[in-house]
Length: 325
Image 1 (cartoon, one colour):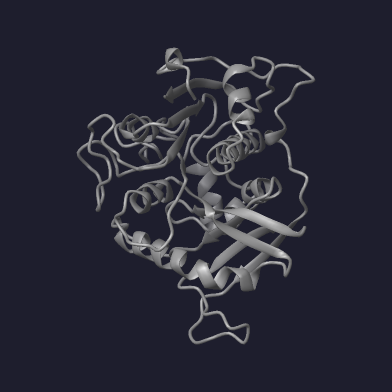
Image 2 (cartoon, helix red, strand yellow):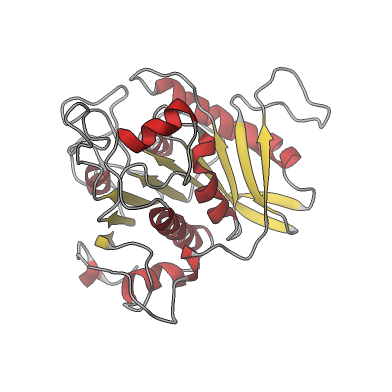
């Protein structure tokens, strides 16, 4: 991203008909295999220690070495609620690891930050035992991402609040949330409310939902309150950083079409939602793929197409596209 004149620029993208669609918003060419890795004690017969937290792992089925994405779930959600999104990403040639950081949690996310770092350290020797035999993870091409509170945790780990043996080349967050509002941040607070104060040492992508700051009903606060949300995280990012906002979609619209159980049902009634989840899920998945190709693999084509090509067919209307150069 070398065009300084684009800095801070706002753009308006809308869904339109064109043969030059952005392929990242569709499923990729790779068949995907899912593995569920349970949290246990002791040593497995495979020779790898069990992970500190249960994991879901999506990986291409074909032979090869692939970049790795660590994805962190939102507050009181299950990692399985993101299956369609993470399968989409993996189909484009990525190994995706989603730990279940907790099932019950309070306002303090310190434990999740530590658990994420421990899980990352386990991946170095343990992940390969849970991939197809001909698939290898490339930890030199590593990204971390998260949704809601998981986005905050992703930023915390990337900023060094917990030590890990691995380093990232890309940081991504969808509707990250750092508390109930400005002045009501939860421990440990990540936002400083000082522009460009994050020294994240990696490229950052922040995606926001246009309806995240809207109350679903008068009895509950918005799921992504103003003052501690995506705009605030982006403003504090160092370069290079990107900010995309899906205008007519909500905080939970990246989840699976069907999320079961009490927690799954709550995702429909606690947050303002768009007309459907699939368009938002495809947009977020495609944007993450384009960003990782740019900053893990050095291929800027998809990211530039999203930014510069008006004939790129976007699954949703994106009201803001800002770039730190």
